[in-house]
Image (cartoon, rainbow, N blue to C red; front, side):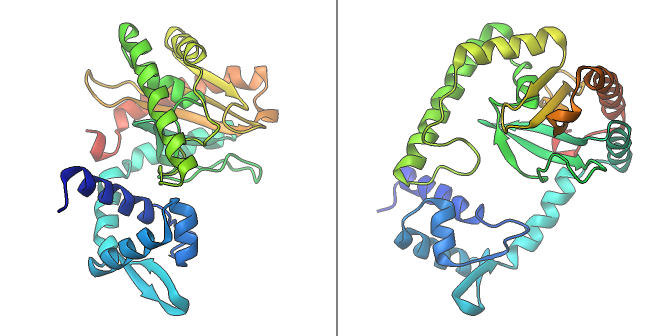
Amino acid sequence: MVTEASGVRAVSRALDVLQAFTPERTSLSVGELVTASGLPRTTVLRLVETLVAERMLQHVAGGRVAVGTRLIRWGAFAAAAWTVPEATAARMAELAAETGETVSLYVRNGTTRVVVAQSPSPHSLRHVVQVGDELPLWKGAAGMVLLSSVAPEELGAEVAALAAAVAGSSASAASGSGAGPHVGSAAEDVDEEALVARVEQARAAGWSLSHGVREPGNSGMAVPVPSRDGAQPVALALGGPTSRFTDEATAAFLGALQAASSDIARTGLPPALD
């Protein structure tokens, strides 16, 4: 008998398998799926056959598994829902040219912050994340800005819940039961007191700056995008090598970011955020 709990677990595991695929890795071996998902091989084999039957995946040459035809429709739907208006994309490109750094829009999804739009730096040495990437919410300037939207009286409880969720994901990853990507590692721990302090600082200042928090040698600066009450918080961020984020540069970055965020509030966000 399939219970509700086991059914939800099966869905979650199927998503772990699907998330192993990326634009650069559209076909994978079963072994690669096992490694990426953290699931037992027998579970992966069973899920693959179910997903193939639903046309979410397909078998290809060499015993590999590739994305299936049903994902074409899902991809088109997702693109329509999450693509920023042309004027917003143009404003982000202008900001990237002005600052020389990669420009990204982030929203929160549970314990992660997700890249929903991006304009890359014109430099060959640059911050590299892709649209759709999920990064830890508790690390980096954009995460502090997104968390600063939480009411001050609720922040402590929110951070405690986030820390508990991260700890649970880390434990699942350590046991090999599959915890999803980019949410931490078995050794990861959230310093709740320090995180609350950083978020409060971002709230008071209206912006956040980080150096080497998520990745050594990488810096970020973020501001909130003004929105109507009740709308999902959005952060506009710059990312790049710490060597270019000098005090003089970041002072100029802040003004450019704030001007662009005001413009983007007018030019619009992805339809999914309306």
